[in-house]
Every structure is written in structure tokens, then in C-alpha cells.
Length: 181
Image (tube, rainbow, N blue to C red):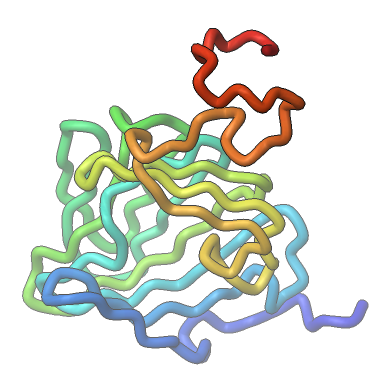
């Protein structure tokens, strides 16, 4: 075995993550560190009044959140529940209608562990901003943005299926019927 299969959550080096006034956390990726192959684990330390990530739904990966300390609220779909230390929360595979987010609405830090499957590729919907992310070949020690192929976009900006392809037809004025021309 090349990696020590043990890590201490509370001794993990937290990497700062911040965007604007709403999103901030210290994050530590632990799954790859202990040699996990099909499960990911990330420790989140979220300051008062912040969230680590926007509300989102994974199409191909399930997450489980375990609140280690502090309090906050968890939203899944249109429902919001208060959470506290000791709570275990499911975030099953879904779509924009089941999107989830953990928020720290308390005065102290909210600390929780996220354990997830590592199915690759993954598609993630962000219903509050009407965007999606697609990622493939995601490194075990990085998130979706570190993937070999990663794209964040909006459906209305999607290209035509044949865009850039040499279809063998020079007549660009031909009506696109969806069939071969």
C-alpha cells in the first residue's frame, strides 16, 4: 500500500476558498489522501453567514454530509431544515429541482464532512444561476474544475450539434433538418 489509509480531519490542511461576500470556506480533500478509489471525502469549515458552494445538484454523484460541529441550515429543493452537530444529511443524485446547499446561518463556524461517490463524468446543475457544469477525467485529488475536460455554460448558449464538423456539404444555406445533407 503506497498511501497511509488514515488521515485526521482536524489536522488536515485547509485550503482557503472565497468568492464575494456570500461564499467562503476552508476545504481539505481527504479521499485521495488516504487512497480511496471510488469515494471522495472533503472537510468544510464555513464561517458564520457564509456557504461553501452555490446550490447545486449532481446528476451522477451522491453526497452525504456529516455535521461535525456548529449549526446551520440545509436546503434540498424548496425545503429547508435546520442542522446541528451530529446530523447526517443525504444529497442523492438529482436535477435542478432537488438541488442542495449547506448554509451557515449561525454566529460560529460550521464544520462538516462531505463523502461522495466518484462517478466520472458528472454533470452538475445550478438552478439559481441557470447554468450547468460538465466534467470528465476528474483527478482524485481535485474537484470538477481540475478535470481534463470541464465546461460551465448555459443551455441557451449551446452550439448546434454539427457546428464545426465537415459534413461534406458546401451549401451553408441549406435548411438544417437534423438529417444528413
